[in-house]
Image (cartoon, rainbow, N blue to C red; front, side, top):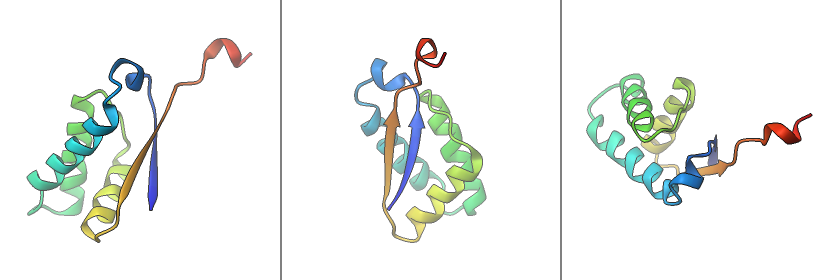
Amino acid sequence: MTEFRITHEIHQTHPDIREKLTATTIEAINESSARSAEDAARVLRHKLAEIGVQMSEPACLSAIERIRSGKQLRFEIEPLPDEDNLA
């Protein structure tokens, strides 16, 4: 199972972000089922951006290809590093 790590503070604002990610991904897959994997990846990327999550186009393409091949996805959400602790 491939994990897509999402580093974003959105999970603090929206504790149900994991469910939103799953629902948004399913919606994008269903909406783009008749499209090429590349087009479906663009749809997924756009839909994720609508909920405040940025994912690269290659990562979206990989997610689409995994789902279409019957494999599972798991999103792992990590907080942004605290800039004060980086010094």
